[in-house]
Length: 212
Image (cartoon, rainbow, N blue to C red):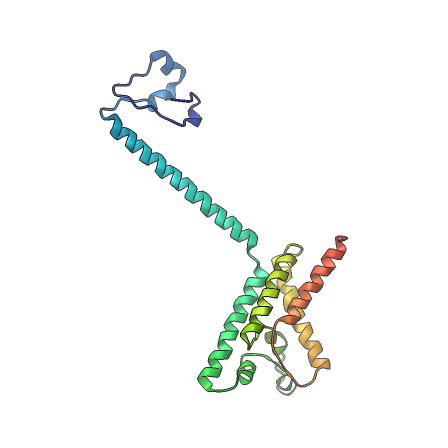
């Protein structure tokens, strides 16, 4: 044994007909479980090497798994992931409806919940003030908004909780569309831009309050 501290044993020497000295055995009673007799030392050494390699592999796997979990937990941005999934699903629905019904993308966007002042005023579909923020028609519009949302949401969640960031995002979408409804013309509007502006405003307030 290279180290008599049995809690930190690194190597075990296996010899044929090995005998533990009585005085050593009394001083280190656990040593008898480490040094033992074998008839085929080479075979035993190979077995021990395999066991050690197996244990090392299991430990490394456990460490990698734990690191992956902690990395995902630390970098998971709820106020980005949730809107991203919703926007992606609705984007796919817009194009699928347009393809299946042979209607324009604008009509498909309205069916999917886009902001449309006529329907809000005449049919009282006020939910469009909220759902319109998650509707996208063009791929590059979706991509640009998601990139902006990702960079902004990560910073906001460093100053607010994930739930607070989501609430700020959703309220900003509604407030932006309310202003559009009050002062804008009869237009069709899509996109989560007003939500991103709201996150930017919240981040600015947080920085000012911290004296940056």
